Length: 309
Ligand code: PSU
Ligand code: MN
Image 1 (cartoon, rainbow, N blue to C red):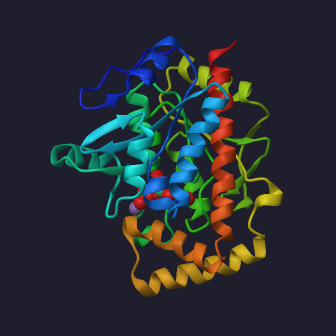
Image 2: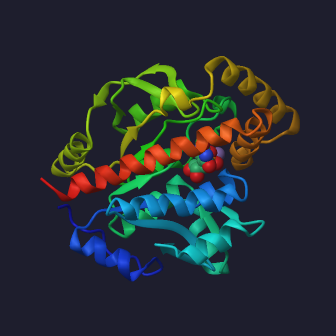
Image 3: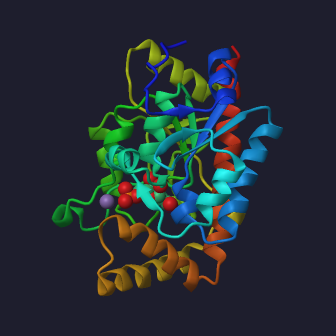
């Protein structure tokens, strides 16, 4: 076992999560931006609570992470999840926002970056999300690259995602993974997934075949004294994906609309996701939910594999 990170005073780890971590029991971190910004009501809260239920049924302790009244919380209660999911105007919280939210006593839906940071601070080793942030299109002009990337480069967890959404610049994102020393392994594939579609059209170096193999990669990382995340790319099932030609057409319209409406910076991702959802008549939402379920299930299996063997 790697050394536990030192407890950080301002981070509240609820007792049953702290106990599970101390006992070496399987724990999976879940982000809150997915229900504060990523999914519409009322699906947001249903999906968030269902993910927790799925993990519990699989013998894994879920730890939903967010900022509640200025307290970064690892292991939000169902009431806290329901409350944040129903509140308007919650801040989307990346790592840089945490000190401000703590000092001002505000709520925050934590992004992958902030969730990974807090999960690691609590000693949680596996984290499931839907899609990871990345390099935005036009980043060579705008410099818009998600803080998810540099944060993951210094945060030793396993992150299960379905890749990055095609609203981003996928090849540039893959280049940045390389620069940042972030290992990417495809789950039973060497094609990098494109979130809504199982294959983004880009190849990655390695495939792993089982949760035990992912656990082996994590142990090897720790044994080497490396401290970056391992990115596990888990494609949506082919029969649950958005039909690729429909996906390409709606994506083109979404990008044009964002440009016209000036949706940039951290508003770009929610804008584009919302547009795609409306234009696909909610089908992208069903794909999003299927993707997330698959990632939560795999993360649970990886967390269990880490506790054995
Ligand atoms: N990708 C998605 N859905 C999301 C996000 C990303 O498919 O909700 C969220 C995640 O919380 C991710 C964040 O960490 O957006 C990245 O935002 P930005 O590009 O502003 O860093
Ligand atoms: Mn950004």
